[in-house]
Length: 56
Length: 418
Image (cartoon, rainbow over all chains, first blue to last red; front, side, top):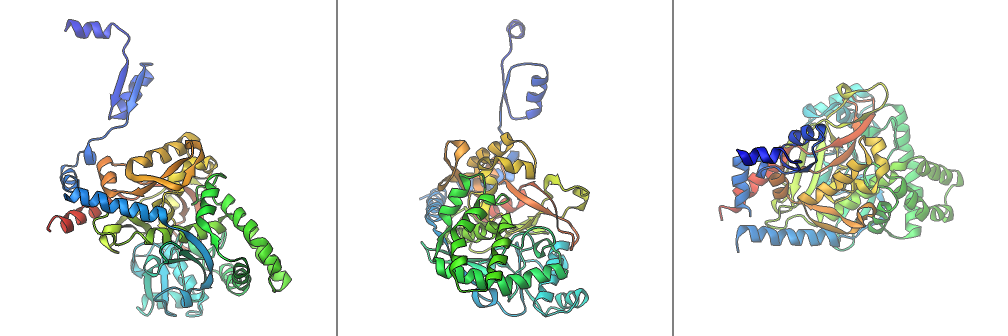
């Protein structure tokens, strides 16, 4: 817990992966953030991800 | 060899065949005498096959207009009755080596550009672009439309056919590559392409034996229609992609097309089978007085350009187009860049200056599309949902996800049973 408190007492630099809303919120609060455009395979659709794995 | 390796190998072959394509304008002809499988009662249309009862407004308008133009009906009422009667053979342009923008209606007497893929020998065809305003491809079907269509057949066609014969073949691949260096993207911005074509053909028009007034009319028509080149870039792309059909195990998309009701894709390893889903509505800019409520679903064969790695895939080459389809210049760059995520490689001929002359993203792989959830970007015109109105805007659209899911499922079904 102490380490977490220590982290938040420093300047935070964020790499946001996935949901863009988190990036937008941080940006609004002037937190330096880099957004990485990432989605789970087939958008998380297990059926399509399973079919895809058969063609690889 | 694993299935994945077989697919990779097949896709490499398909990609190479696409890059090796050499689309060349070789002349003009009359559709009924030139396209395979045409009869006097054939009406070709854009997109995957669709029955009369399922056609959208602009498609029905264009079909009725085509029937009146052919003299098969004398007015709209007769045309509608005939279209419903079962006596007309409707079919997809793609099944006859043709492509048509928007409704894409092609009937027996219409003049067509003849484009040949010189590397593989196959042909593709498209009608002459009518220009903007009241035009058949947006479903307009009144006397103004018929007058222009008859002029194209009786005046434009003989003059241009003779001028092309006088000039000799025109290398369209080089011309498209040049357009991309001049601010076009080969789908909705055709100012450079049309200008280059006019520069190529104008002295031949002057030198052929023909009525001088008619020659002037033809030149004025070309000068007045920036989209002339669209109906050349489309068959150029069609004959390029047709050469990649029927490569077993290839998951590369060889056609994308919409009939205004459904969007369809075809892939190289699945013969001529269509994978369809309802077409999307287009996000874009509307002309004054119109809104999304007036819009038809996405329509036309023109996304054969994106299938070949130009059009939306080259928007970074055409920053001015965002004024027509909406968004910022940075969006255009992002669209082009994102397409590298879902394609097999970079085009060897079609290069984008603003990306450091990087070859455009080319060869859509359905596996990459399903995996990433990134869908091909298409820029396109928006047709009014009712026939007779015309274009009401332009914007950006994607194919429906279901087309790619269905194609992928079919591949698994066909190739994992062996």
